[in-house]
Amino acid sequence: MLLGPVVERSSRFESMKVVVLAGGVGGSRFLRGMRAQLRRTQPDGSVGTSAELTAIVNTGDDLWLAGLRITPDLDTIMYALAGINDTERGWGRVGETERVAGELREWGIGWPWFTLGDLDLSASIARSSWLRDGVPLHEVVERLQARWPEVGVRLLPATDDEVETHVVVDSPDSPGVTTELHFQEWWTRYRASLPALAFVQHGVESATPAPGVLEAIAVADLIVLGPSNPVVSIGTILAIPGLRDAVRATSAPVVGVSPIIGGAVVRGMADACLTAIGVETGAAAVARHYGSRAAGGVLDGWLLDTVDAASAAGLTAEGIETRAVPLWMTDEALSAALAGDVLELAAQLGRTTR
Ligand code: FO1
Image: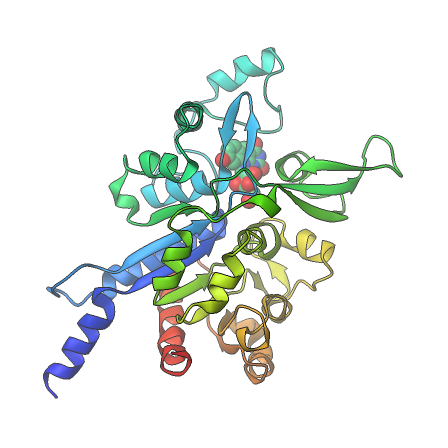
């Protein structure tokens, strides 16, 4: 018995494969915590490979601008995990300058409301150059992140295909006429202030999951729906044909983390998006929106903040094993603690769902 726990523990973590579905800022904070937590729970001196952490990242925010392919969520996560992100703005690079953007504005190239810094542009120029050479997006991401091995998380775009989220709004120029804006214009130019009548994912019907995505889900020991926008980030990932079914079919527990605390978004515009699809901005409402796997949804477990603890029992009774834990990730230690809570719930579920 002496060897039992040690072998069991090291074997449990030795090859633990965790897959996180993520959008931009919330996703990168959570991934930083999970990365720290997995490293910290590796038994010191344990034999064998360390845990594998894979992020399946939303690409619906992506766009062509100034002749370049911009991939905001992939870049936000890559920069944050490489420690070179602008933590104030939540996107782009730290120590950024905007000399090229100033020149482009003189020619009316790009969008004045969408700032592409000089360092940030370098990634988009490299990406666009490789894409023009026929390199698929998942390989472009691999090449870009190879510069920063400390990222320590395998970044996978949900799909290599261009599937862009557009927002249907009442035209700001001619009221009564509906028009479609790219999600980035709706968010960065209008700050999601124009009521979204609908979200459209152009090209989603013919899109396929990027190579490696379905395989990562099939062999995972844990799938996490990160604390990202349930509509335009997590929803967009799950809408890629085959992805939702793969999550529902996996033998791993599926645990979600609420992006809503006390009826309010942590940051971003998830409330505007949830309202647009008729879902209340609440931790329990989002869990029900994802649905319990037993009832045809994707969740086995759900983490909501202690301020929303009253909702936990009801969700558990509906087949979504729910825990109330601190969700605010204001530093890496808190993010790691939250990741620990996810691993703990998954371990409890793992014994029941396998
Ligand atoms: N967000 C803004 O609010 N204003 C910007 O000018 C802006 C520029 C930008 C450039 C590159 C990039 O990767 C992201 C950028 N973002 C900007 C953030 C972006 O809108 C968000 O990261 C997501 O797409 C929304 O979750």
